[in-house]
Image 1 (cartoon, helix red, strand yellow):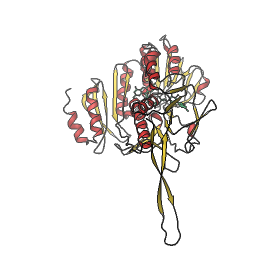
Image 2 (cartoon, helix red, strand yellow; image 1 turned 90 degrees about the vertical axis):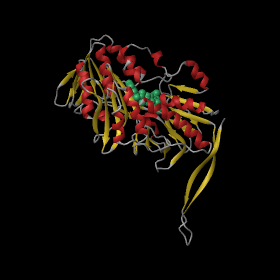
Image 3 (spheres, helix red, strand yellow; image 1 turned 120 degrees about the horizontal axis):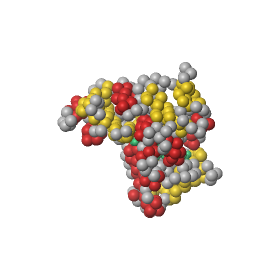
Image 4 (cartoon, protein in one colour; image 1 turned 180 degrees about the vertical axis):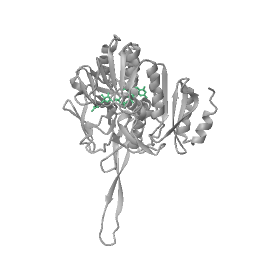
Amino acid sequence: MRERGWVCVGVVVCVGVGTLSVGAVWHLCRVELNRVVVVGASLAGLRAAETLRSEGFGGEVIVVGAEQHRPYDRPPLSKKLLAGDWEPDRIQLRQPDSFDELDVEWRFGIAAAGLDADEQILHLTDGTDLAFDGCIIATGASCRRLADQSRFAHVHEVRTLDDSMRLRAEIAGGDQHVVVIGAGFIGLEVAATAKQLGNRVTVLEGASAPLIRGLGAEMGAAIGIAHEANGVDIRCDVHVDRLDDHGAMLQGGELIEADVVVVGIGVVPATAWLDDSGLEVRDGVVCDETLNARRLDGSVRPGVYAAGDVLRWPNQLFDEEMRVEHWTNAAEQGAAAAKNLLASASGGAPEPYASVPFFWSDQFDLRIQFVGRSGPDDEAVVVAGSVDDGKFLTLYRNGDRFRGALGVRAPRWVMPMRQLLAEQASWEEALAKAATFET
Ligand SMILES: Cc1cc2nc3c(=O)[nH]c(=O)nc-3n(C[C@H](O)[C@H](O)[C@H](O)COP(=O)(O)OP(=O)(O)OC[C@H]3O[C@@H](n4cnc5c(N)ncnc54)[C@H](O)[C@@H]3O)c2cc1C
């Protein structure tokens, strides 16, 4: 099945003469979807390609990926793969046979260098161009870096399989002093893994507690205490001035000596290639609620969708425009973007993507799960279990609004909260549900 359909293109005709009024004329243009290009061959891109096929699209699907590897899972890069418990073949997102069955043209090791959204042309780094009828942008994010970071052989980041294998080779012996810059989720996962391998580990964090951005100060501090109990030295309120051949130099002149430095200071969406695309890019590709990309003038660009870490969209469940950097979101949005592209081309109605963000993190023997959102003004209340016992559920509120839930070693308590958030339940309803949990 190839998708053919009609797409509305709004043309405002302004005739400001005599009694003629300003009007809007809608032209219907037939759109034939013969070739869809997916840019980014990771989780969101894979799910998009799979969904195009499972929804019956019979045209050409080309997936362009900057990495040499077939799509693989990133969460183990800071956990099981880094620890040496798993080998790279264990983290493949699909076995080789399923790739062939998909009937997709994979172009690995080639990046998109530019996009002309109106002319529907993708420029590639090998100098060739790809014309398309539909495009799904799934280029994810890359690590934020410190100045001169790439000059130092002992300084690492963890975003790709190659990054993780390089770091693994350095810390596998368990006799290094590993300094992690940044106490976010990935920094703390790397710290836990390095410590479990026997290394000495120091974490440097500029904020007053770990994980403040994700969990707030109080809950972040609770996770930090668990790290310290496992022998990780966490130093908060310290600012790295620059990297050094011997480690990291703090503002004020203290040198933290290190054999290995890991920079974990967040990510930036991979959008540099979209600079002259005509699309709106603002800390991510800006889309409407159906994941349809917007032009610089705010209008949507029919046929161009985005998904995953690279996407910024208005999530109607939270009345908030957001960009989410979690696995479940990338998987769900890849599928949603593909469905909506097909729906728009066949004259159907694309569906808004509204979802409760969910992520997990494994650190030492802690399984941390979070659903919803938390912000700097939210109040965090432990409602089941206790921090001291190491198993608890914390709910987040902003006024009367129930916004999120954190569970530590408490999966059975977290998932019902995702459902309540999807139903936009009140704070009282969330408390009543938590009161039914047996501790
Ligand atoms: C170390 C690590 C641990 C994580 N752990 C967890 C976890 O425990 N739980 C959780 O919920 N989430 C976790 N995540 C987050 C999760 O893996 C991401 O949200 C998910 O990978 C996003 O998928 P994506 O397809 O949107 O983007 P990505 O996975 O970033 O993939 C984007 C792909 O696009 C490619 N690309 C970039 N630019 C171009 C271009 N110009 N042309 C062509 N290709 C391009 C990139 O090379 C990359 O392969 C973790 C991430 C990392 C890095």
